[in-house]
Image (cartoon, rainbow, N blue to C red; front, side, top):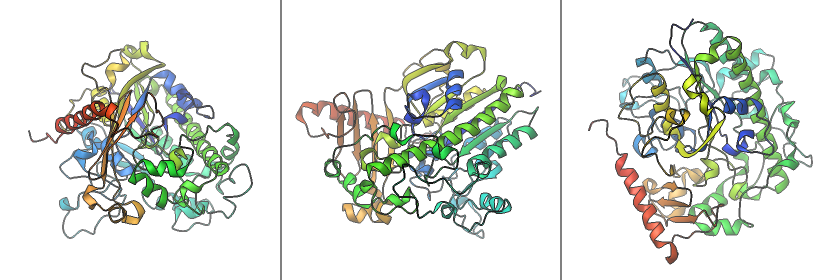
Length: 497
C-alpha cells in the first residue's frame, strides 16, 4: 500500500541529445526501454534545456527559473539561499525526496555559519536524502570500486586513460570496467535498493545517470553495440573557416576547445578531430546511452513487477545535450541547439492520460516546466517563483491557453579558454553572456557586448548563415529582439511582488 499518495521518478540522463533516441528517429539508437516509456506517456519533441553546462541547467530544473533569474552561470556558482528548490517543495508536500547521482550545485556561502569551511564545488544541494552520491570527484563510487578489486586512484578520468584510445580500429577499446561495476550499473543498483526499502510507502526519487557524458569509452558489450558506419554525419559547414567567420564566439570556441575534454588522451583541438574519430566518438556515445537504457529498463521492470507503475509519475529528461561534431565542436558550448535540445518524456499512469499515450507534442517545452509539472501532479500550488508552467494539460490532450511559441536558453562563456574569454574577445567578464530565442521559423541570439545573430530556419536549418544585418529580415530581427525583451521583463524576479 502507498496510503493513497503517488510516487514520482525523475530520471535525469546527463548530456543526452534528443535526437539520440529511437523514439526521436535516430537511425543508430539502441534505446528500447526509453522508447517504451515514450509509448506509455507523451514525448515532448521540442524540449530544451535552459543553460549549459550542468550547474546552470540543473539550477533551472530545481528552481523552475531561467538562468537570468537564478543567476547560476557555471558549475561553481552557488544557488541563492532565498530560492526554494525541488527537494524543499517536496518536503512541504510531505515527501522525503531521495537522490541517486548528483545535483552539481553549491550552497550560498552568505547563508552559512562564518566558522564553517567553504563547501567543495559540486556538493549535493540541501534537502535531499542522498542514496548514492556521484558528485564532484566521484569518491564514493571509486571507494566502492576499490572494494570490488580494482586499482583506483583519486581521479575518475584515469579509469579511462588508454594509449590506444585513438588508433586505426573502427571503434574505441572497451572501458576496463566490468559491465556490473560501471557507474551506470552502480546508480541503477542504488535506485533498486532504495525502491525495495520504500516498498509500500510513497516516494520521490531523482535518478541521475552520468553517462553518456565523457569520457566516451563504453564497457563491453555496449562498446561494440553501435556500428560506426550507421552514424549520421555531423551538422556543420564544410570548413572550420566558414564556422569561425559566423561570429567571434565561434572563432574563440574553434581555436581553444580541446578534444581531450571529451576523449581522455586525445590530442589537438575539437575542430581537428577526423571524421573517423568522430564516428568512433559517436558510436561510444550511443553505446554509453544503450547501457543507461538497459539499466533504466531494470528500474522500470521493478516498478511493473511490484505494481508501482500504476501510481508512479515518470519524467525523463537531460540537463543539456552534446555537440558530437556539430559545427566542428565537441561537448556543450555556445548557442547551438545541439547543446540544448534535450528529450522530455512524461508518463502519467492515471486514466485521464490514456488518450495521449504514445503521442508526440510539438509545442515548445522547457526544463523550467518540470518543477511545476511535478507539483501540479502532486496537487501542490505552483509558486510565484516558477518561470515555467505545468505540462499536464498536454497529457490530457489540451494545449494550455497562451502557451509559448518559442524556446529560450542562455549561456555564460566567461570561463572559456581557461578564463581568458573576456581578454580574447575584448569585453568585460559580466558581458560574456548570450540569450537565444528560437521559434519554428527563426532563431535570434543576443549578446551582451558582441554582434547579434539571426538565422532563417526555413532556409538554413543548420544555423550556418547569419542574417542579422540583412535588410530583408530587419523587421524579423527587430521582432525577435522585442520578444526577448518582453520575455526578460515578464520573468524578472517576482517572489516579493
